[in-house]
Length: 502
Ligand code: C2O
Ligand code: CU
Ligand code: CU
Image (cartoon, rainbow, N blue to C red; front, side, top):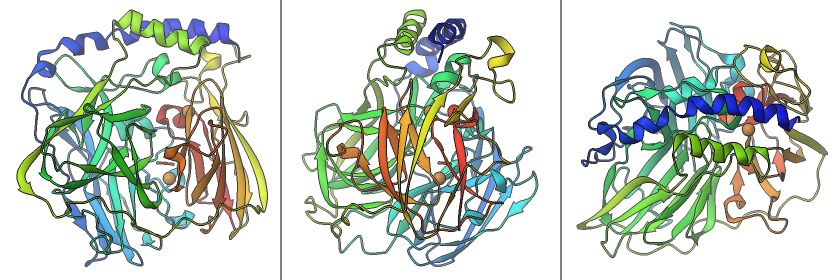
């Protein structure tokens, strides 16, 4: 990596970031009226077994005073419905593409074969439909679905092509968990966005954004800017999805009250674990329980996202950006909670909600190593350092940018492997399709940090992470599984590989 070249290009890009200053002062953003938290409709498949999604273009207002933005969504203008299926169910899905561009739709977190996974090889042409059968055979969890069209994933997801997929076993009542959708069981899709002077959604990534990932200066929840949520005076469950392109959240409540983490990407934890701060990388999901019994109002915030590089050049770039834009990387408000008079169903924190986790595996069929590379070094400036489409920097894994025609790894079905992932320059959220894994080691060097307990499919790699991956789903070479950085600008620039399982 030639840091001097890198810095040079960064400075050129820095000027484009100045645009966002205007939005901070825009009248639409200063409005005092906060919208009520929108809760996407629940599309319950547990009876019908049929899932119909239509990807479409629409217009959506993010703030009360903003002008309508042109957006994409599934069955609606922005985002999609909350889909709920039961463990053990067979779902006949139909995804229709009413956009004027190809679209692949991936089921992130579902343990299903490569041929129905919805990766880039399964793009749907405009006007066409795709009809995968989804055999749901995994523990209860909060998964999601989103656009995965190479190399347009970042733009399509940013425009709204994402939705939540809940897997249930109908036993949450017995577990003592809140489970009334929209009342004491709230699904929150967290996204950061940039807007123009009229409050219209804007996605014009500069070189900066392509290198560090695109961040917005406002947080929207389920498509609403800084909303307010009425909640019962009880224990409330929040299903959190980081659906942002690049932002890493550091979630906390402004009064310091704990979040009791009860589930990560791929399922429940044995018991809720309290924490005052929760780190969430793009693609990750957590479910937390929050005690609103005392009835006081409280706000959820995110601390500043420092993933712009360490003490080296990238760090300087980050500072340069705040200097040029005048933006201080401060706390950003996400949403506020207003407990109401009524009592809710659950008035005490459950102690035990699921079986203990299995022992960490110690026997592995194989070890593989992956290095997440930002490959600007040694390449000439200008066109030469652009990716395949000339749109940005080239990135890769083990020195090689993603190539649709090249299968990077071949794995044996039914085995467990030890994967070691290394990141350079930045932290990168590493996601693997078609599996769930356990984190064996992360940046702490000791027991993995709180966020990395439990079953996961996405792990933030801060220098180095080691995971134990179980391969239970087949993937033929025509429809392989992906592994990639979930900073979507990095994925589109080539920080992705593919593997078959047989
Ligand atoms: Cu959520 Cu391959 O992605
Ligand atoms: Cu996935
Ligand atoms: Cu990355």
